[in-house]
Amino acid sequence: MRVKCVICDKIESINDESLIAKRLRNRPIHTYMCDDCNARIEKRTHERIATGNFRLYEQKQNQDEW
Image 1 (cartoon, helix red, strand yellow):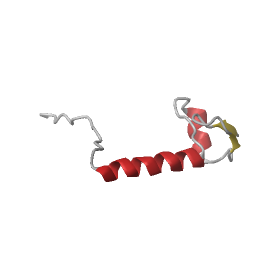
Image 2 (cartoon, one colour):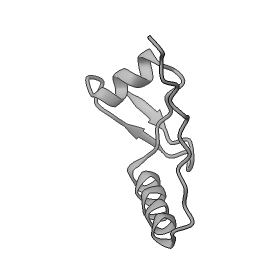
Image 3 (cartoon, helix red, strand yellow):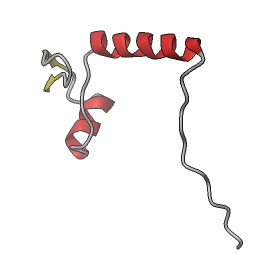
């Protein structure tokens, strides 16, 4: 399967039976990022977390009265 990175527009070939290929086929909302872009984003995220100013906002869980 040929895929295109959403950030750098590099075209790569992945195995048709891989989990990533299955997700891309069955759920078109999922996008593909190449390993280089994924590593770059992961590195920058860890740098932001290390500064202490990074906050991950999660939705509040509503407790059911049931």
